Length: 318
Ligand code: VAH
Image 1 (tube, helix red, strand yellow):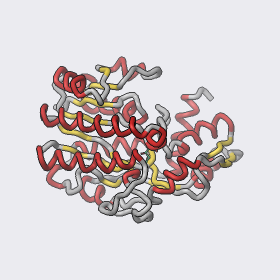
Image 2: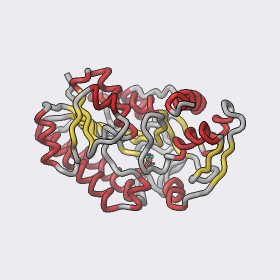
Image 3: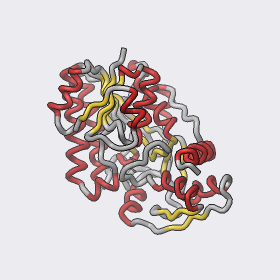
Image 4: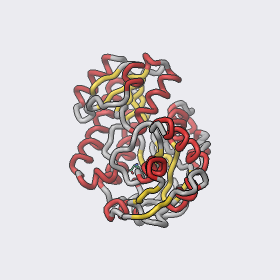
């Protein structure tokens, strides 16, 4: 039976993944961890074990893994793209030293490791449309550098030490439970909140900027499916391109207008996050994930919009 430790368990992915994993593997088999306790996660804190873990402290991480006899680490703690450009040294420390600590503990304690990469692992010289699974990766953000290095480090620990490492390159993730923290694709989450609260949204990403996106239920499905996939069929292992849709701000606005006809979108572009978005692909080729472990997203843009607006109306008491 898997005994899973989730790092970054109070973040945008971790908060939903932890609850989903507890439904699959049992509350007692999923230990949530975070650098600090945050408000608003009562269900998660009450439904199973929570530990304070700063992934840059390898000793603390090892103690928790041994204490709970963990055999699987889902490593989500990371600094995202926009914050990574404000604080590159912090992004390097958390994203690289944190991952190194996770892989070292996994090697010593015989744990499997899942950790996500990102479309940020690609840069301006990468083919932008239908970006191949195997292609040039020269990102120009610190976040992207740590994602490419992380992919290589996970491959190294698999080939050198036999650590069962697996991962996907996530696109922008959209969800209603926990707000994202400091990303470039966050506009595609905030637009739904503002559509309900103000019937308008001012986008920090420019008109015409296409990026790959995915609704959180599909992201959680990707993690659990890859985690349980037959290892003999995995060729790529640590960096599968996965995507569910690709859109630009005008397209998500049009989808919202089908439900909120009076919704209006305007722009106040943030040059830092626009430059990051411009360096990323317009659309990914996710055929390797489909062939090697049955990746098959369920939500398109309109299905996501319908569910997001329904769930946020309840969450916001509107
Ligand atoms: C970010 N949401 O914007 C993250 C993600 C592909 C985007 O890695 O930094």
